[in-house]
Length: 204
Image (cartoon, rainbow, N blue to C red; front, side, top):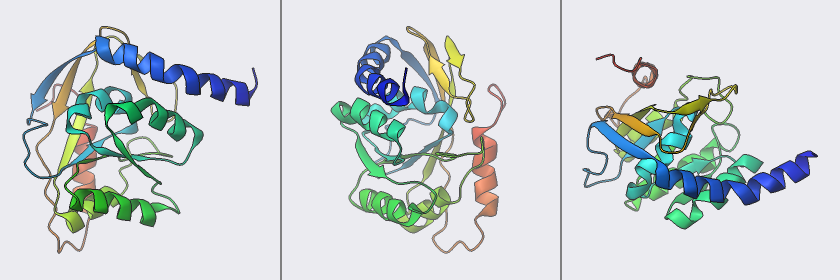
């Protein structure tokens, strides 16, 4: 099958598969109440956990940072009916425009969601944009780590977790990370966020 036909097939099938799968998943939140904030927050996860995390944060209707790739188009087509909003861009050459778009959403009172090591990785490498966004906006970073039940771990750079139907997922919601507006060195907070997102499940 050609790349074009495969992409077309993914474009048409993915929304149907996602909606059927979403209805079968169940979540057990552990940690902070993800909906218990009166002001906007920045949801942060690894690209590995994005398929599991998106249904979990759906009630908060965050604006999601989506790359300008063909897979990004598929994700938008899949999620548009669920009340999500989207900011297109990446941590690369379009990072400035994406940053401004996310900041505008927060200033308008909307939550945002970022896969902090996407779209190109490497796996587990937290890009500094999420910390700078937290500093400028004043919104706390809420790290999310998925502990899936039945799932498939894909052999991709991001080690994507694909949950299987009727899987029960333990979603670990870590304590908010607050970033001072006047921060000069972001590396310690970047490393702190990275250590939380890569913490072995079950560790304190």
